[in-house]
Length: 91
Image 1: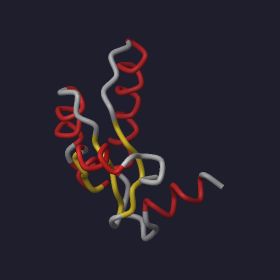
Image 2: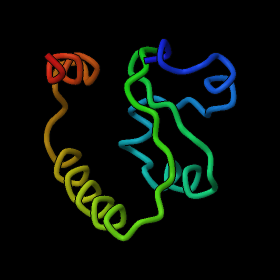
Image 3: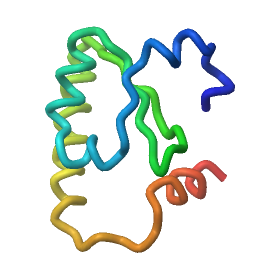
Image 4: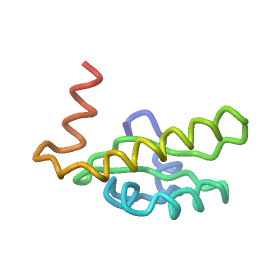
């Protein structure tokens, strides 16, 4: 992922672990709503870059994501790494 981003853009981003996104999504939302891009990592490996969006569809998408996160957090913890799930889903 960092291959696609310039070194200067990565240095200006806030980097947070996936666990932080799942446990405190409001903190990540505050960063992106302030215009800051956030690099989400799992075990030090980059997964996504999150940025603010202003459209109505993004508001609807955000509510759907919040509902999905609530569902995921109610489930027991998996032994499979989130990074492995993302990598396998891209194949």
